[in-house]
Amino acid sequence: MANRTPADDKLTSFADFWPFYLREHARPATRALHYAGTSLVILVAAAAAFTGNWWLLIAMPLAGYGFAWGSHMLVERNRPATFTYPAWSLAADFKMWWFWITGRLGPELKAAGVQPDLEPRS
Image (cartoon, rainbow, N blue to C red):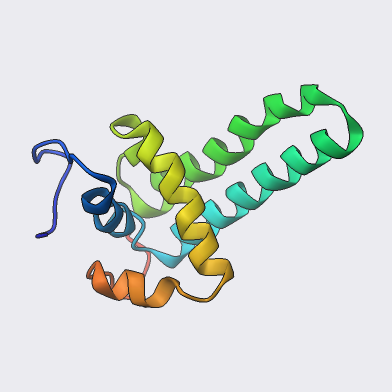
């Protein structure tokens, strides 16, 4: 699929969304902030389960979206995919995090046309 922009027609499958998502997370700092937020979400969920304090779950969206949206505003300077594709964006956050944890993200980025050494936008 060619590079898509938010102005393009709506994406109709997660398979089409995934490369678009990766291109929207082209900067390493953007991805790093997403990894931090996703990791924090997992830790908060584990803490809630371990302690039985289910009120901790309120912090999950704040942690995840805070890091993610901040990275789009400050680093990537684009509109978060969550605003258009909320469910796919959430699934892609965890997919990207898992591929990063398992060392398999590089080929995915390359297939999506993302250069791994992009400099921050000014």
